[in-house]
Image 1 (spheres, rainbow, N blue to C red):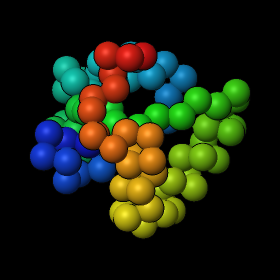
Image 2: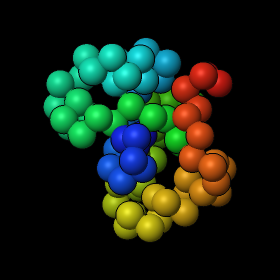
Image 3: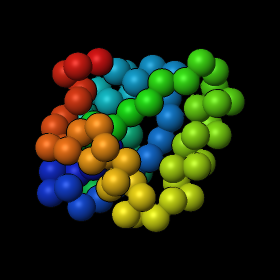
Image 4: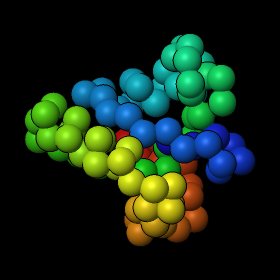
Length: 86
């Protein structure tokens, strides 16, 4: 997820992505995402199990900012908000 100016990147995982995105958009999540207005879903992956999702989250977080930008660009070059497609 990113903020409206496409500067702040946030990586996380959830077993309820639509609910999690709604919480971020409504500023229910008080910490990082609320502080930096992170509320635009530009990339997501699905996994078969929680452990796989957590492992993938850690892989993405370990990458550089450019790695994350490249990952987003590979599937969403316009950086459209994908939350309406969930």
